[in-house]
Image (cartoon, rainbow, N blue to C red):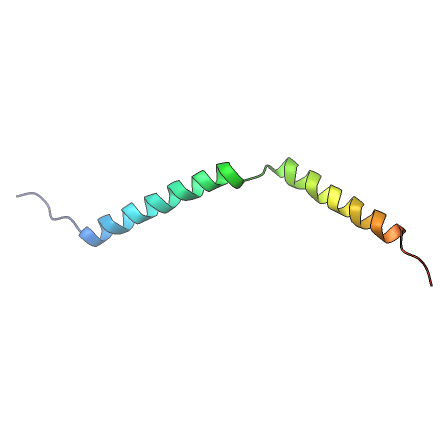
Length: 58
């Protein structure tokens, strides 16, 4: 006889593999590199500084 298969384990492993595949796909589609994140952060900081410098003093 062959060894018994735990169906719950098989089902959970299949679900994990599916989630990992979806996560990998989303990382490629929506992910940004560290350099891109840094550029965006610097741009936002510059915009905030420029806006703050244009405020009128009362």
